[in-house]
Amino acid sequence: MPSVELRLKEMSLRELREVAVQAGLQTESMRKRDEFVTKLISIENIGDVVRSWEGSLPHLLDGKSLKELKAIAEKHGVTVSKDGRRKELIDSLITHPSATAIAESLKSEKSLDAIKDELEDVKGEIVKTTEAVRLPSLEDAAADPVLKQALSLEVDFDHSEDLLDQARMRFEEKNFEGALSAAVEARESAERCRKEMDDSTLAYAILSAQRLLEECGKAGRDVEKAADILRTAKRLFREGDSGEINDLLEELEVVSRNLFSAEVQRARNEIHKTQDIIREIANLGADMRKAEETLGEARDALKRSEYKRSIEHSSRAVEIAETAKQERLKSIEEAIPGTVATIEEARHVGADVAEAERLVSKAKTALASKEYLLASELVKRAERAAMETQQNQILRAMELRMRQVEKAQAIVTQIEPVIDEAESFGIDVGEARTLLQQAKDILKEGDYVNGTIFAKNAAEVTRRLEPRLVEERARRGIAKPMEGVCTSCGSNRLQFTDDGWSRCSDCGYTYRWRAPAGVWSKFKNLWKD
Image 1 (tube, helix red, strand yellow):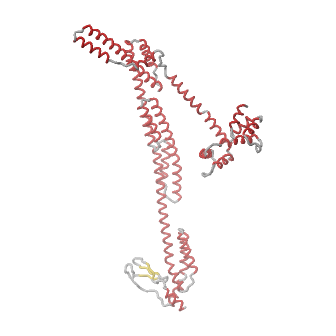
Image 2 (cartoon, helix red, strand yellow; image 1 turned 45 degrees about the horizontal axis):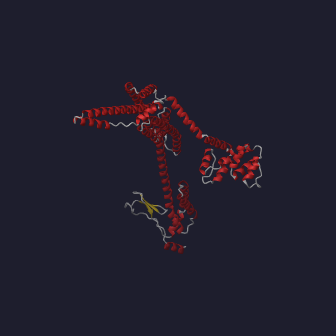
Image 3 (cartoon, helix red, strand yellow; image 1 turned 60 degrees about the vertical axis):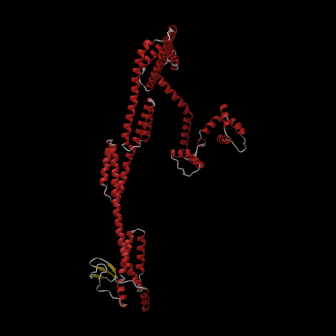
């Protein structure tokens, strides 16, 4: 109960009110936090109530951003408005039939987040333990401090040279006693410097070999033999046995260099192998940018002599490349149904899709044989073939439509002046005029089928007007020409018809021999009538 009480005291007033409602309390009379806490603590199963409230969907959604709420809705298939507000999204999630499943999912994510840091710590400990198990001990508690101290030794031969110069000068001055003292002192100084130089160079060699062995051991190499030599070298250094340590140091150098060279070569081989894999997968059309970046990190690690990290980056690059490869193969497989659908669309417009179907069949065979590059190319060719035949068929259909529209338009052009002339003579042209106007309107909308039907109907009605039209012309003294000259080619082989049109038999040129009546002609006709 104390932990529950502490939890309640940490809650805000709004949260306390929600818990009270969850517990079934009447909250209208409570205003202060202390009142809520006191009332809630008195409930026998308040711990269960708090846990139930913490696991409720409204509480789990509280604090989520608008972007996070949209992601949750998309993950669980909840349809929400793109411009929906935060409260509307929360209401949609709470009232959705899968609200229980959403709450369980959020609780699981919350639990994982709670132990995420702990898992990271455990992971680090596991890595350290694994490396410790794999790498034999290279430490020597007694020798290591001496080696580190030897690294900071300053080797100064200048003092020895000064003493040697003094011995030379005193000898030349025939001060043999002083020359002897200076020579002995110079020799002792040189011996001390030589000893310091030996210790410093041995320390650098031993500790450098140790670092190389550590790198090789972390990478999984067997360094047990080299570790034994290193430990022996440290012991001899500590004991001051410079005679045997020189021979041992040569052996340690050879073993360490061999191990290290093998590790360097391994890292390089991994980079080259990864590069070949990436190049091969890139030929399939897969996106290799991320894999190339990771491989670049492997190269950089190799330059820094971080060979283990270089190998890890190479392995990671291969994983990324394989993932991209699978995505690419999936896209190739999914492209086949899409291409088949394109072929069906082309077939529906009457296109010849035999070549496209043949290519798709070959693509399926290549895919089954794991010839992915060939399958990808065949799918592209099949889609292109289907689209080309479809486009050609559509173009032919458009040309046909255009010809039909031109034919219908020619009918309209031919009968309209006839109707106008009949109307100028006072003949009833109502039906013909109506059909003509309908034909014009329909053709303007692009419906050449119905437009042609109405144009032909208008032409049929107009032909029935021709006998009356001939009579009216005769009454007015208008006679059909018997001969003439073509204004286009100069031929005199002309045909004149009762509808007022004439046609050249040689060049096919057509024109109206009966010009439309002017305003004065219409007035005279009305006066005569």
